[in-house]
Length: 264
Image (cartoon, rainbow, N blue to C red; front, side):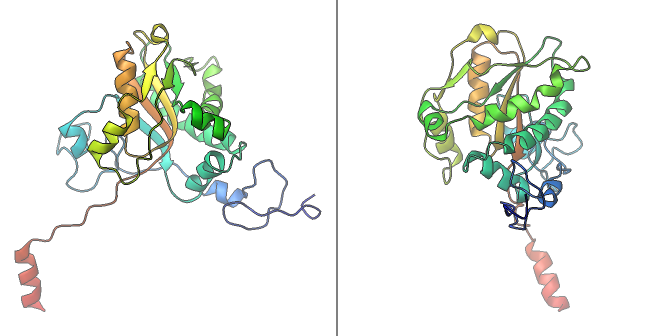
């Protein structure tokens, strides 16, 4: 079949040795690894020297120390880069739906790590909703497709059940791209964009908001604010990938520059 119908990997362009519904080679899939970096215990942002809250535990980044987000904790499987980024793009923008099976399995690993934080009552998993216009143009909600795969292990007797609810939260206003906006502009852009239409499904229960990528956290924070306002107990964010902030430029004290110049 490979000889009669040759195809290339959609990520690295190398020839595919096997026929698969997902046109991605095994080498690219194997390169997707979970992230192991010091991270904020709330938002999951990567921590650099000087960003932590000192000796306090658990560690917090500067923004979370300054203003706690509406959600309790955000986790992701890996960094939004390399093959993981390309796989998300294949699903989200190219419509390669078999990619949802791989991404959902990765999300399931992140969700398993989060499950110990849930309350005794079964939590509700809500895929981040799309506006009706975007849903019509794309044809599917990638967050819902990923969530359905990720929740399969939770149907076994060994794990606490997680209820999937795709109707409780709606996106009632289409918003412009967040790219290039300031933090204040991002908040204004998504404010009022979401609405809980079935609050009885959430009352007093933990909620896990599921999405493909955690970028700035503005959308996740607005969803969490709306969900808690409708009666949810706590809101957790679980995504396949996370965009990390760039490492800040290191400040060099003027005295050190003078000493280095004198030594030279």
